[in-house]
Length: 326
Image 1: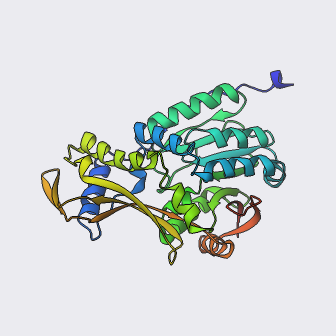
Image 2 (image 1 turned 180 degrees about the vertical axis):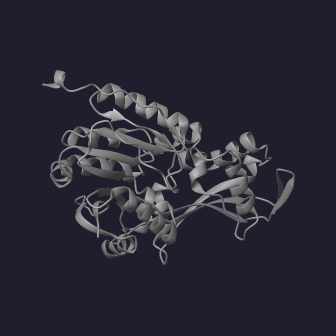
């Protein structure tokens, strides 16, 4: 039967990658604020992507293995809820491990569109998936998914759009930013689409903190690699030995806050401008929100979305939420 179906090949890459000066603008703006901050999206150069994959294999980092097990356990119910012939759109393609689980479990998806800011990660993921799923059209988009992204049109009509946003990546954004991302997602879905979102759930703070402070120091290296990237791409002079990784759970906000902390009073130069750091001054580089059931439902509602289905792992550590437009 498969021989009668035209074998799609990967269409041309849609390149909407932000201009290089966007990084400089964000860094200058962030270093000028109090407290200083740099957006977490800049973690993911080639080395940063490699280090993040290494983080997911650390024993303390429960998120990936629990989400993968949850996907396996609930895949039949997810396939029933999504239906046949979906165009799958993934925000941030990563390594593609969870993507394979989803595409393998869905019923005859017609196309897959990864939206990824890292060209190397995008190419690697798409190339690997093409050989595994030759009858799914690959329509990669190199772009920042936090901005408006037009959806490529598949050659075979899709019955429904499914946005896939795993890994609790939504938790890396503030409440307002998350609402904006979900609102943009709502526009992509149309009237009958669905979104499958992975969310890390509120639990013992010690368990959460350990996930972001692994004993092997991989997360610390990942965080400091941000400074390596800025030195390489912007000609900055951050001294890596002058900063340390710090991640702590803030119970009142329900989130991990990750910082690079200056170990001494020092001055850093960026594009001819000098920025002073005091000893023990913390520069924020990431949020990781942990959600309650009601808190996430309220967040989705603010973007015009409702929870259609919800699945948690047996320990209630991690959840999958299927959203529909209201």
